[in-house]
Image (tube, rainbow, N blue to C red; front, side, top):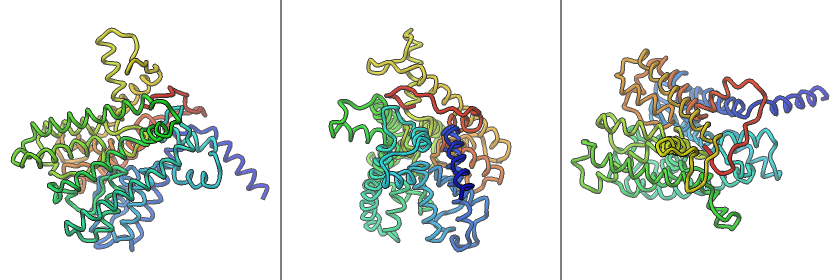
Length: 447
């Protein structure tokens, strides 16, 4: 007994000295490995069965909320297997240790220093946010939104005559809110391209997931009178989300040839949905990605790289980091010595983090594309798009995912895992050697 107590004490001391990024790295890795082992159980599969590498690919894609799939979820996994995939999506979407921390908080009033550090790292929280209260809000908000989304989708699918409308509604509600992009339909939502209500519900769920929990906790605190104004982070997130949506929709509406023959309303829906699905990194589609023009594909790659927002379920560089880079460019052009938004200066630490994040992100994208060029027979644009989709945890594909070589699958697995953590956090987890905690940064802006 004394040995167990002593070992537990040493384990807690070890965890206190380990950087939270490393713990998040190991945590997500454990989710992936456990999911992989479970998916390899034969009775969770159907048909000819799914190979070990494909199961690893699906597990990684689910935990990273990417949505890329080398095999059909509906055709190759039983109902129980689909439940496992959905569980992995949910765990990946709400963040490592969030569920466990919520269980602890239901019995206690606070979290350990280790769990708080991991939570702050996973969600990129501003220093002004209390991790324990934030996690409670995340769980409650997730359950309410996914339940409401499932109810709405049930009536939509039932009216459209979809089989298993209840399960389809639940699966796609969770997949949309977690910006995972996994679908029980092999063509995603191509068959529902003209269904306004499905497009609207999926878009709302995706935005709510991608905008991030920071914004909703912020506005909830404002509504309850706990704060006098929302943080700078929330204002930047909402402004960037709006402009990226409007800009992406207009460009696709004007220039994409494959939707020109549609009626105006369907053409606008198609343009909006593809801009939304790329920037929120949800990964659904209502038009064939392979049929898009090169200009549209480049635009979608840019939106995938920018991605969603911190503390949300989406991936990408993040809108706050992108806005910080824009601020640096604007300051350089105008000759100002500091970056300011709405009259408020952004601390140099945040600018430093944004620039470093961009550098790591572009490096990972270039290396991933380069390796795919070596291993895959696909053309350059296909490989670049696939790498950007995996790293941004988007899930859109030009159709090459099922044809990847074993090496290509391993490359995408690494890119998806890197994208879920964030390339900068991934780099810290691999190369940070000292037992230091994260530097306390600005109270208002999470990058």
